[in-house]
Amino acid sequence: MRIQLVESARGAAVMAALGIATGGGYWFSALALGVTLLKCLLIPTYHSTDFEVHRNWLAITHSLPISQWYYEATSEWTLDYPPFFAWFEYALSHVAKYFDQEMLNVHNLNYSSSRTLLFQRFSVIFTDALFVYAVHECCKCVDGKKAGKELTEKPKFILSVLLLWNFGLLIVDHIHFQYNGFLFGLMLLSIARLFQKRHMEGAFLFAVLLHFKHIYLYVAPAYGVYLLRSYCFTANKPDGSIRWNSFSFVRLTSLGLIVFLVSALSLGPFLALNQLPQVLSRLFPFKRGLCHAYWAPNFWALYNALDKVLSVIGLELKLLDPNKIPKASMTSGLVQQFQHTVLPSVTPLATLICTLMAILPSVFCLWFKPQGPRGFLRCLILCALSSFLFGWHVHEKAILLAVLPMSLLSVGKAGDASIFLILTTTGHYSLFPLLFTAPELPIKILLMLLFTIYSISSLKTLFRKEKPLFNWMETFYLLGLGPLEVFCEFVFPFTSWKLKYPFIPLLLTSVYCAVGITYAWFKLYVSVLTDPPVGKTKKQ
Image (cartoon, rainbow, N blue to C red; front, top):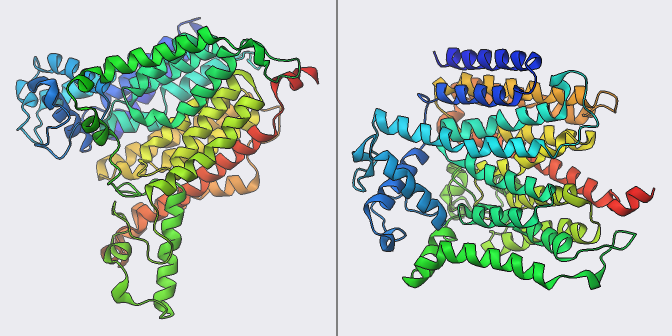
């Protein structure tokens, strides 16, 4: 039944796309309408505990005074997003009361009703309107030099599909359940404004975004350095280097004022209540472990896997005492408080140092090798990927923070398209464990196949006059995702390992995808470090 729903949505979208090819300038509206229809058809699907998280936040902000928002702990799903998101939930709650008043009771833990389901699902779909608008603005920033005769070969059309129909965002928001759409809308809109040289608007939108969800701090270094370099310094030398006497103190002050006013509006009420430390303790819970419940496919997944392999070898060679090995490290493999057996255990400070070291080269390039807005976008993606790879307690969904901006680069250069396809295919597959119920298995496989096939075919067509997007090694790696999925979903459940080592499918998925994401990060870094500054490029 659910496969039929997805196929019906796909059919409607294809018909819309065919209609826009002959209908002039209405193609973008048709794409947006088609994906909205698909979102509506996904309403009955599985939803995660995040559904209850946001229902509880609706109840907290609606029924309790602001002084109790960040102290309330009746549910284990306490409010741990910045104040703007709390006010967002507060605003939604005043609409929710007309659907089902009971969902707004703090003591109704794990409450669910058909009206609650409809309200929360439709609230995500409705707020996605900001994301749609942001995509439309991003399309204005795309270079049309490679535009083909056919509509479907135009970079703007391809970018619209890659963003509006992004597989990862669809399953995370409209099946798993979260509100990432409008948040990514704010980020993409801020990026578009910087491309349009509307720096103040871009800075304002990003400052607002940070007070909606603090995970976007990952990319704050790119914003800070770019705005200082390209807005506060008003002129460059002919070789592209900075002209120090062009610094504008007025512009720096105006940027600082934006950040201050937005922060004051967000945190001011809690500062007045002497609750700022409590708010910050909720936003940055360093007592959580190195890895999330399922290892995000990053460097620490590889580190953990190596520790496990060394542990097994040590036990087989009788170099380790089995009584001294932490039980959790060898039986579950997926706990938050992970204790390493052979390798040194990792602290939050160690992850911070690794993250900063990984980010710094891209930030230096942004300052010393300016490449305009595209250089900023590349730095932003590297900051997001570096934080994902080396950060503390990273969620697997954070890969979208790099995937979506990378879509903008993918339609510009063949090299960036190659990196995008490796990153997106690997990153999207790493989200599969989020949907672990049987009815959703065909949906996630079908949707990912459709998106991946379209991404590869459309970008290959766009860059058909250039060298192949993949070498043999990259092709072999990406094709390996197929056998991995077959083993995890159809072979492993029937083996004797399922009871003793239930974590193996997640471990294999995480480690395999970590290799691809790390490779994409390295390949993008090489590109950033070797590309010449804009000034030298023009001179040549």
